[in-house]
Image (cartoon, rainbow, N blue to C red):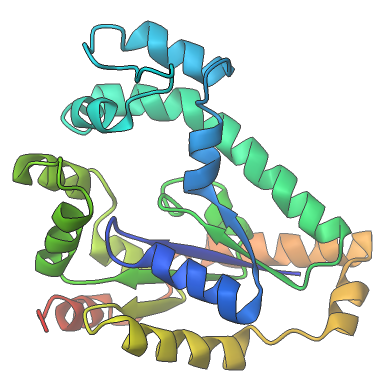
Length: 249
């Protein structure tokens, strides 16, 4: 089973790529954003910790008791300590659910799964188990325009805070096996995704069954982890790639 890590800076088109893979190729998608919403639903342990810690935020909760994510976001993206706390109480639950879904995919002989994870490279261990990693990026100008259009409640300062609290595009490029420029619109991106799917993501079902043997699967996983640990930098000319992406088109 191939594990593909899909990431990208906020408002760069990662979710667009994820949806395309799902709809056209029927790939199994593990959506970290969706899981992150589920683990902070009312009654969950992480929810109680968040409500207790951030009780000073006036509009922390909506009328139905759920977290007011925009208001919470305005606070944590201005204060790195608060963002670290939020990540500390949510990420372990998110990663546990991701691992459960990976295991379920493995025992049901899925040929390929895509981990749609915004903080793939920041996560620590998830990036090491991916056979390939993909970053969807765009220029800072286009990124900010898309973010403000998608979230009209954000001020420009709020948008800048969200962008600046993520790993830089350069660091994402360095650590990615494949980098796709999403400045030119969906059709251009779709063509690049199609090329990748045909060249690297076309897995034979019999090979999947063979690799599902526990000893073989474990050996393959250890090999993948070792490779990603020993070769953390995947691109030879990351600055050149970044320069091409930063050209507003």
